Length: 213
Image 1 (cartoon, rainbow, N blue to C red):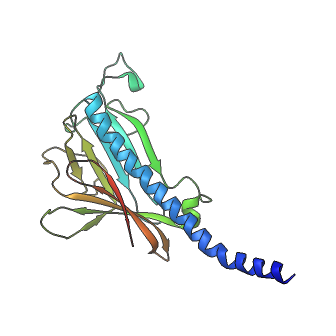
Image 2 (cartoon, one colour; image 1 turned 180 degrees about the vertical axis):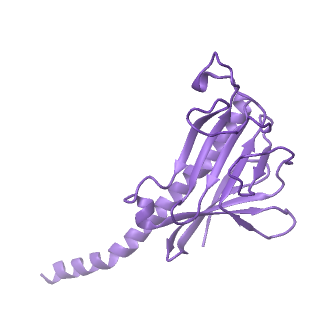
Image 3 (tube, rainbow, N blue to C red; image 1 turned 90 degrees about the vertical axis):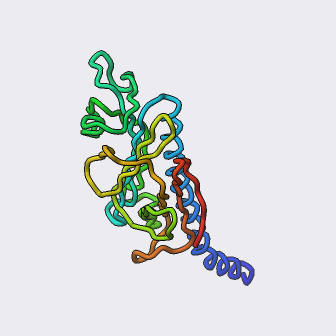
């Protein structure tokens, strides 16, 4: 009986730490999925000769992090859906006019959504994303943003728009020279706890993942 009681006590003590470790792994998996989506965007741009748009939104409460990959296509009436020819331009008034299932100039390719339901792991662990941009490569100053767009061209260049505009526009925008950072972590009362997983997007557009506290 004594042995059974000891095992029970040790098990009860271990449950909180095991739960925290499991939630940390979930945050790592979410960050990895976001990183892979960025890599998919750049790879598709180069391979298909198409402009690929990443749409990023988060506010930490009602939106834990939503990331969508759209491909620019021609409005050829003879083609439908993904059968339409890819378009290589990030700019132009019609390129990203409307991003819906019936868009004539864009097709939804893939996405990562951390808001799939109130009973999800993300909700239980309070996993949230926060996004920052380092606009000046010579200064260590970050600016937070909640809505942003990154457009990849077939040449591998990345154009960034983090002005918060509901409409992705890249007319007159120069290729990015700064870094985008997306932090994914568990939170408690709005404060990150445990290990933070960060997705870094350098000017070359090749996303990377690292962990820190």
